[in-house]
Amino acid sequence: MDDWYENELTIKAQARLDKILEHFRDSPLTAWGSNYFKQLEGYEGIYEVRFTVNNIVHRPLGCFAPFQNDFTFLIGAREQGDRFIPKTAPDTAQKRRDIILKDFSRAYECIF
Amino acid sequence: MSVSSKEKLLKKLAKKAYRDAYSEESVKTSLPFQIKAMREQRDWSQAILGKKSDMKQNAVSRLESAEYGNLSINTLLRLANAFDCGLLVKFVPFSRLVGEFEDVSPKALEVESFIDDYGSLKFWATDSKNGELKDAPDNHQEYSDNAFYYSKDLIVDQYDRYIVQDSPDYAN
Image (cartoon, rainbow over all chains, first blue to last red; front, side):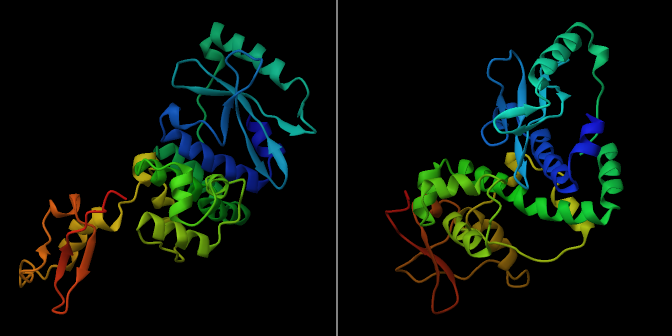
């Protein structure tokens, strides 16, 4: 995720994501929904933070793990023509979620 | 906001490009969150806020998203009028800007309407040397903590005294 943040996001997109996460950090989970956050259909326990900067739709995927109030980013992704880039992002996210649920030490706390 | 988060933000702000983006997103991303928080504080639907600010519901919906990105000062003033609160637009140093966003919980983003804020205003306006506000004329009810539960129209009379008039339509 650090590579994705540093290399795939423009500075403006980084600031947008930082601001969104700033609000998520201080809000109850029930207030995350609607504009920027939703469950990814067809993938159990996978959620996306969705935001658009300069016509690029960013859709990093994550899950609630290791604990209920922890949100762990699993993979950085964006959308192009209704498809994920990378194409396998949802499947990769699902696999990584399973790994984290089996071994909590595979997730580490990030500071943003 | 943890010390670690602050230190990380400080490092990012050292880059001019990030500073510019942070400043922009402090408006474009954070204001929509505040509009939503203030609307929900008042238990208003988007349609009600639209009606009060002379906008369509879908326009309000767009304003609650950073994706829209076209918040004009005129639009913000219309919202401020609808919420019956002030709008502060001013240049500030980054030390002030980051301080404004240390707590961005929905509760922290709420802003009282003029009526609900009146107690603070009264405290601000009261001259400490003269003490309490003067008596109001007989045909008006002097402000009290209870008055705003049924009275909306707060006015300043010809003697420069703060008074409220009975108004049965405060339910709005």
